Image (cartoon, rainbow, N blue to C red; front, side, top):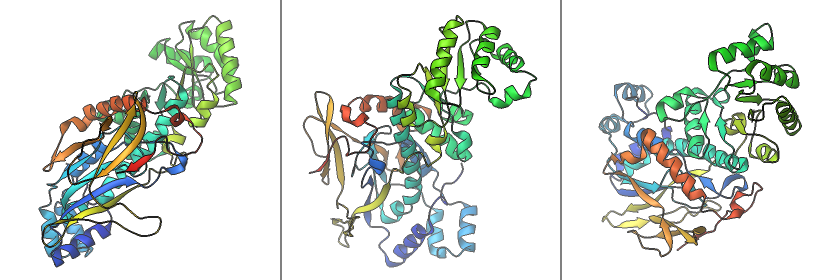
Amino acid sequence: MTSTALLTDRYELTMLDAALRDGTADRPSVFEVFARRLSGGRRYGVLAGTGRVLEAVERFRFGDAELEWLAAEHVVSSATADWLACYRFGGSISGYREGELYFPSSPVLTVEASFAEGVILETLILSILNADSAIATAAARMVSAAAARPIAEMGSRRTHEHAAVSAARAAWIAGFAATSNLEAGRRWSVPTMGTAAHAFTLLHDSEEAAFRAQIDAMGPGTTLLVDTYDVMTAVETAVRVAGPALGAVRIDSGDLPVVVQAVRDRLDELGAPDTMITVTNDLDEYAIAGLAASPVDSYGAGTRLVGGSGHPTAGFVYKLVERADEDGAMRPVAKKSIEKAGTAGRKWAFRLLTDGVATQERIVVADTEPRVAAARDLVVPLIVGGRNDPAHIGPAGARAAREHHARVIAELPPVAMRLSGGDPAIPTVLA
């Protein structure tokens, strides 16, 4: 089991060290993950990474290698190192189901534990949720723009090797049909796809020879890449080699609306009306929306999905909202600084619905879960007494998140599907 204990910031361990010294480390505490606003004028956010968080918390252990490095760097005292050697998260975590939508102030994750147990999880939790939720939100907008046409995730070469796997998972949860990344397929059971790149065509003495080799290996139902040299010549060669049973052609460059229409017309003229067209080439939701009237059958997205420049961060923060006093009584706490003021107290969340359409995100501050009429309860237990709920982890958890997302995004009002910047699709009301 690979430890996640050092996937954190130094100040979390120095806070722990100081709290252990002054006797406050064991105070019962409540930490909350939320976004103050939706970045980039987005109208909703998609929560992803929850299952990965739960597995990472389980692996948050300080073994000999981690402790030896901390000692060599003089990060914490020997007494704190002894405490870390025995660390096992024994608290509880609740929150939104993975794949759920979130809005400003939505308490997507709540950690209840001693201050010491909870404070050192901040960076680990935020690094996963911020990265995965940013990908999932961008992916959901692309899926919406594609209007039921499938999209494949193809961004592995545009990010680092581990991020590629988590990005594929997040995109699949948000509705992408498949990924090119094999590790995502092995680890999370995300469907995989892929045929050939331009290098395969360039390897051969002619485009026809490349197409014949691919068809011999994969059958006529494969997808042939037709923009290595001249697109229209390649389309004619592809149909001549594969026949009308050719599965698809892929276009990765050019003035896409014009090229796609020309390719569709030529395929039809050549007697291949069932041959599909897939389009790639640095697509984002705006480019996909621009192809809505074009005869595109499927898309592939990568750079603008996983590269970081194509979408804003999720903007989650991890804040202490309640802790025990010296006498054991729980006290709500919050920052009061300008533009970063928080709301103190343990929170519960509900999605109000009218005729199946979401109308409000209601956040209730209470010690115990209240009841709200005509609303969907958003908060579920994820870890209880240090033990993960298996329904939320592994490939089964990822599939459940995908299915949950498909249900809840259908609740949004039509305004949520606008790609232009604006207010959140539904208001957040603090009760």
